Image (cartoon, rainbow, N blue to C red; front, side, top):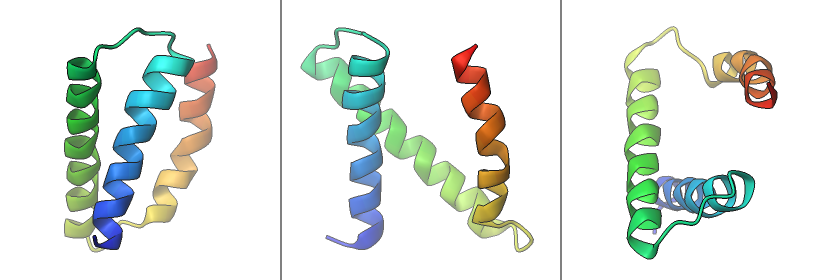
Amino acid sequence: MSTADSQMLAAASSVSQNILQEFGHLKLSEKQSLFAARLTIICVSVVGVVLARDPDSSVFGIYELLPAFLVSLAV
């Protein structure tokens, strides 16, 4: 398994299990959890492609937006 594949699997598992079920207090069936994981993989892939296509983009730009995103979750 490649590093990118492992990171996508980790992100998908984190969203479907930790964020939605534990933090969001949602009761997901196995099918719904699998759908959330697949949707997460698609979203992570799209973000990766967008970042890769723009030569001026940087992963550090994401970290600049992170505090505002976390504040919006807390509200």
